[in-house]
Image 1 (cartoon, one colour):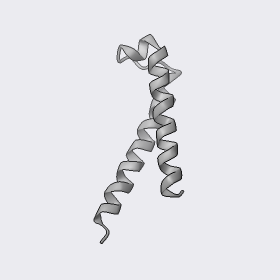
Image 2 (image 1 turned 30 degrees about the vertical axis):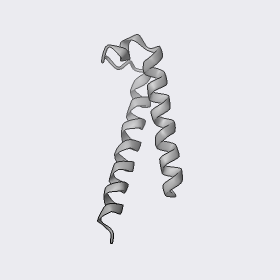
Image 3 (image 1 turned 90 degrees about the vertical axis):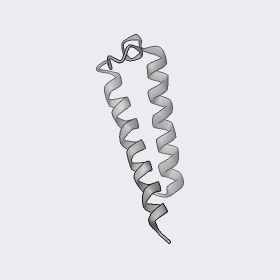
Length: 61
């Protein structure tokens, strides 16, 4: 996946997660619901992958 595609996927996952939290009272109270769990897990996974890529790129000369 290209850097641009990875970042776009990360931002789409962020939007999906924040949109869900904005509409879900359980998630707003730090009690993730069954519907939100995979949305939030996808965001966290994409965030971790993006951060790892950025760290790896910083280490290259």
